[in-house]
Amino acid sequence: MRKLSTILCVSTIILAACSSSNQQSGEKKTDSMTVNETSNKPVDAITGKLTLLSTPKIGEPINIKFTVYNNADTAAKFCKWHTPFENLMSKYVDVTMEDGTEAAYKGAMAKRVMPPPADSYITLKPGDSTSVDFDLNNAFTIDKSGKYTVKYNSAGISGIVIKDSLQLNIVK
Image (cartoon, rainbow, N blue to C red; front, side, top):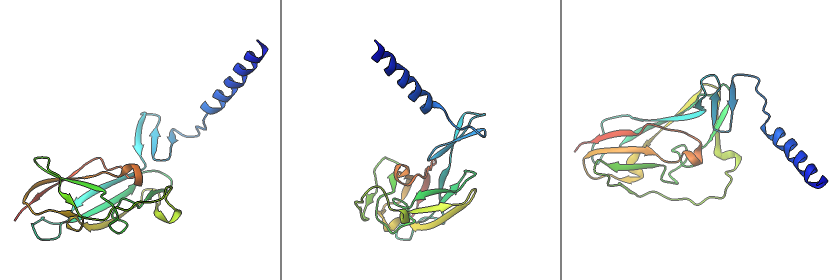
C-alpha cells in the first residue's frame, strides 16, 4: 500500500510539473504557431503565398512568386527543403486541372537524411518576408490550355503554411 501511495505522489508531481507553463504575456508559443490566448485562435508564425506574375500561356514560362512571411513577434525560421528557395529537388506543389487530372511532375525527387542540417533553414526577423520566383514549367508538363489549381503541399517539412491555392487559366 505504501508503494502505491509513493507512486501516486510521484506521478502527481510529474504531471503538475509538465502542465505548468510560463505565461508572461497573452500569447503562448510553439514551434510553428503562436496562440493568442485572448481570442484562443492560433496564428501561424510562418505563412506563405503563391502569386501569379503574368498571364500563363502554353509553351511560355509560368512564373510564380513564392513569398514567406514571419507573423510572429520574434525571429522564426523555416526549412528551405521542399520550397523554391532551393534548386528543384522535390514536388512541393500539386498542379491539377479543373477535371481533377494532375499535371505530370518531371523534376527530381531527393531522398534526405533527417533532421535537416542547420544550413537548410532560413531565418526571418519579426514581421519580415522573403520571396523567390519560379517557373512552373521547369517541374511540370503543362501542355493543355485550361483552368489549373496550384496548391503548396509541403508544410509538414518546411513549416510554411499556405492556406490558399493559386488558380491559373492557361491560354494557347
